[in-house]
Amino acid sequence: MSNTFDSSELPGPRRVLVLGDIVLDQYTWGRAERVSPEAPVLVMQAKTCDVRLGGAGAVAGLLRGLDAEVLLAGVVGDDPEGRIVRHLLDQAGIEGRLVQTDAHRPTTHKHRFLATVEQRQPHQILRVDHEWTHPLAMDTEQSLAGAIENELENVDAVLISDYAKGVCTPELLARVIGAAREQGLLVLVDPARSGDYERYRGATLVKPNRRETELVTGRAIHSPADALEAGRELVRRYDFQAVVVTLDGDGMALVTADGLAEHVPTRPRQVADITGAGDMAL
Picture 1: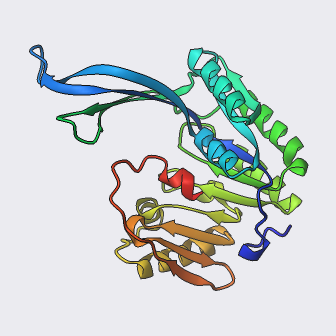
Picture 2: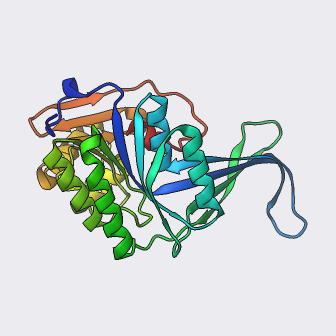
């Protein structure tokens, strides 16, 4: 498979390696019908609680929903949340042997509280994050990179889900993207919200959203035409084969290194929660 982007070459469900920041998403649902006498905050009566794979774990889960075989690479802590992540991976049929345990950092854990008020649609009223965003220690970084390189001959594509939680270091991504290109593999990236895309240099396709594209290019994006021009700049600057800029209600803008520039419209719908939209698009 060539690493030059051609939609006609995209395979059906195959074996995919997902690399990135693994998150444990926890949701507590309940009702909030009064204000606390102790402080000007809502009192929520908890009803149910559930846990789900988030971040790169969510991408892996979505791929399983498309019948792909998935090998997930990342890091969790030596903590209860990390053990829950591994249990969820087993339940979903996601291979987790490249998920390394780092006793010196916690599993990234986001706890959302969603409350119903006066029988209306539940809304998020609070999110509590437990995370450490420092880059991986060098020994963990090197171990993870080596393990991924050893698996590339057994996969058809690599997806990188960067949530800026410390796993997707420049050194790790340079090794993985370089090795994947040598194997002729597609490398698709959902980038972190930062101005540094040098770490993704040479990827087949990068999928920033509107705000991320504005941040890295310094261009205001008011229209699909603006997004197409920004995509051209990213392709030229970072040696990408393609860029897809997601534009919420305006659809997507696709630019390729061989000159294709296309706006893909959408049908806007009313939504209550856009969490995971970027994961689904990737």
